[in-house]
Length: 195
Ligand SMILES: C[C@@]1(CC(=O)O)C2=NC(=C\c3[nH]c(c(CCC(=O)O)c3CC(=O)O)Cc3[nH]c(c(CC(=O)O)c3CCC(=O)O)/C=C3\N/C(=C\2)[C@@H](CCC(=O)O)[C@]3(C)CC(=O)O)/[C@H]1CCC(=O)O
Ligand SMILES: NC(=O)c1ccc[n+]([C@@H]2O[C@H](COP(=O)([O-])OP(=O)(O)OC[C@H]3O[C@@H](n4cnc5c(N)ncnc54)[C@H](O)[C@@H]3O)[C@@H](O)[C@H]2O)c1
Image (cartoon, rainbow, N blue to C red; front, side, top):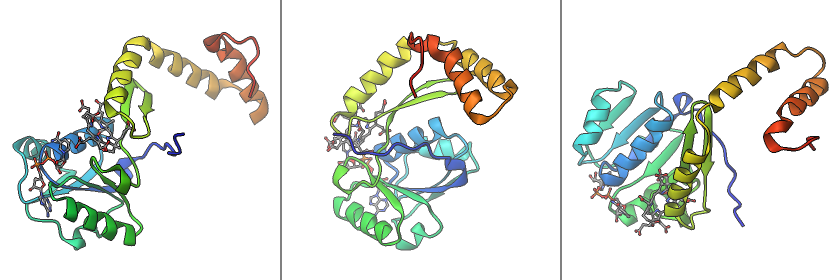
C-alpha cells in the first residue's frame, strides 16, 4: 500500500536548501530545476562539482555556499534536500530540520525522508509524477520512459481547447462540470462519466 500524498509544489514561491555538492547533489538540483526552472535554491557544501557551479553561474536564483553545513543554513528555508556523503551528519541535519517543522528529503535514505522525489513524465502542461513507494526508483524511471512514448505529443493542444471551452461555458458550477465531463467522456470511452 502506497500511503504517500502527492502534491505539486510551486518552488518559485519557496526557498529550497540542498546540502551536498557531489553527484547526488547535482542529480537533485537538476531534478529541481528541470521541473521548476524558477526555483530558489541555496546549496551548501565544502566541495561543489563544476557542473553545479556552471548551473549557478547561469541562474541568479541559485546561491552556492562553499563550506560545511551549519544549522543556521536552515533559517528561512522551506524544504531541505540532504545529500552529503556523511550518513551521521545527514541524520543530524534531518533531525534539526524536523525540530524546525521543515520538510526534509535525505537522498537514498527512505526511513528519514518526509517526502520523496518522483520520476516525472512531461508533455507540455501535462506532468505525471510516479512513485513506487520507494520500492524501485529504476522501475519508476522505466515507466516514465514507457508513458512518455505512449502519450501523444498533441495533448497540450487538447488541453488548450478544453481550457477555452471551460472559460466559455456559462451557467452554474454543476452544469459546467457536467458539460466538461460530457465533452471529455470520449477520452475514456465511457458513454456517461461517473463522478
Ligand atoms: C525517482 C527518482 C527521483 C530523483 O531522485 O530525482 C528517485 N530515484 C531515482 C533514481 C535512482 N535512484 C537510485 C537508483 C539506482 C538503482 C536503484 O536502486 O533502483 C536510481 C536509478 C537510476 O539512477 O538509474 C538509488 C536509490 N534511490 C533510493 C535508494 C535507497 C533505498 O531504496 O533504500 C537508492 C539505493 C542507494 C544505494 O544502493 O545505496 C531512494 C529513493 N529514490 C527516490 C527517487 C525515492 C523513491 C522514488 C520511488 O518511490 O520510486 C527515494 C525513496 C528517496 C529519494 O531519493 O527521494 C530518480 C529517477 C529519475 C528518473 O526518472 O530518471
Ligand atoms: N552517487 C551515487 O550514485 C550514489 C548512489 C547511491 C548512494 N549514494 C550515497 O549518497 C551520498 C552522496 O553521494 P555523492 O556521490 O553525491 O558523494 P560525493 O562524494 O560526490 O559528494 C559528497 C558531497 O557532500 C559534501 N559534504 C560532506 N560533508 C558535508 C557537510 N558536513 N556539509 C555539507 N556538505 C558536505 C561534500 O563536500 C560533497 O559535495 C553518499 O552517502 C553515497 O554513499 C550515492
